[in-house]
Length: 138
Image (cartoon, rainbow, N blue to C red; front, side, top):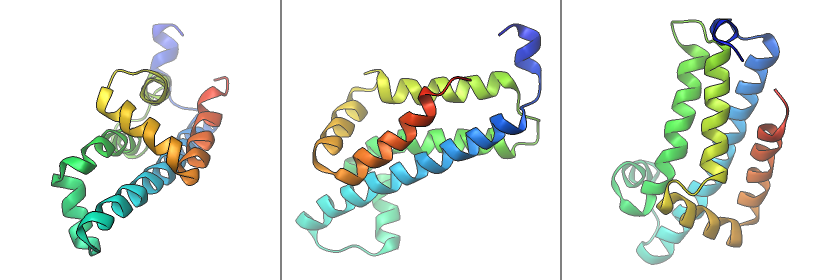
C-alpha cells in the first residue's frame, strides 16, 4: 500500500470487518474475564459486578487482560473518532491484533493466554473466531 492509498477513507467492507473483529475481540475478552473471575472467586469468594470492575482495573491477576481492552478501545477510536478512518488505520489495527495473538512480545499475556487456551473451551472457540477474520485477505 502506498502513502496515497493509506490516506483514503475506509470502504464499507473494511468498516464492517473492523466492527466484526471488534465484536469478536469483545467476546474473547469476556470469555477470558469469566475464566479469570472464576479463578479469583474459587480462592476468594464471590464478587459483585462492581468488585469485579475494581479487580479488572487494579488487581495484578487481571492485568494481562488489559492489553485486549486497550486494543478494543483503539478499534472504537478508529470507528467512532472525529477524524475519518483511513486504510492505514485499518491495516494498523489488523496488524496489532495479529501481533497480539501470534507474537510473544508480551510475555505475561502470552503465558496467561496460552494457559487459558489449554483449559477453557470457550476461549478456544472465541480465539478461532478472531483468527478466522485476521487470516482473511485484505
